[in-house]
Length: 388
Image (cartoon, rainbow, N blue to C red):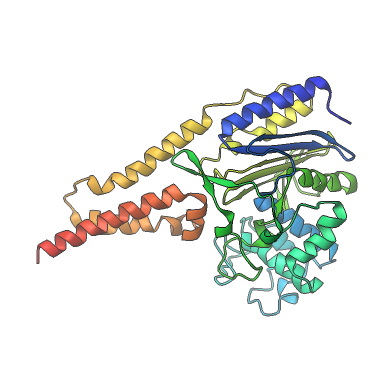
């Protein structure tokens, strides 16, 4: 059943405003109920709702679905399935699914950092390990299992975790000093599940899909029962906030959002081919609230068309300030030319991010830090050489 003419027109006008406000080159939107597509539209570079994009962390609920499908014991230690993994027994399947395992945000398979369990700490490694469990239990690689047992049975024919199978990938973009620039996914896509040094792997965030297929995915939940997630909590790849069950995704070159509204009997997916992790414009626009209001027959709040420019104006000013630091004269030369650049290069560690992650999600920050630190070190070295 389609949306009423008035609701469809309001949603179309709202999403057109959102598209312009995000400055994304392309956007795809779908609204489904359990039986049909109620609204679908592609904007900008996205010429149809069947173009493939990266969906980022929307992948996590798919991995959780595979874990459920395989009958994996939620209370078992993950080492019951991955015998060569060296983590405490408190790292159970359930704690991986709920991000309460104690595994640190920045942890990778070759550098597993485990703190006390219980508190929520979002970590891609939790779902990387769950993907390895899928492989261990099924005896099949992650992409093959997901295609043959999840995607194809649902009719998601353009969904895969194998970049080599994609022929219609919408070019991704990242924001560089406020301007969207093309970003090649091939540079970042993991070529295998056991890539130990990666911060994010296939089962944590690298499924590729279309908004059409993602609509089918949400119909699966609308027909078979929505995820049981505590209000304000996280479980099985989903957050919950009141009536909204949702997840967002951010991948090098792409951003995504999906939402189930059980009381209205609908699901919503928004995909864009631009990653704006630092500016976070799509989240700042609170489109989930706007779409919910429209579908519930209420007026949405006006779209803030200036949010992107304000945020990226401030960020660009910050990056330029960092790069201008070598021009500032300081009486304490050692502090300024040695301690300061060392501190600048420590920023990724302080925010619990690897250098490759910073380059993928905030390239202008990395350029600013490295350029400024290099010039400061060079100034110190030049002065030391002259005084000899």
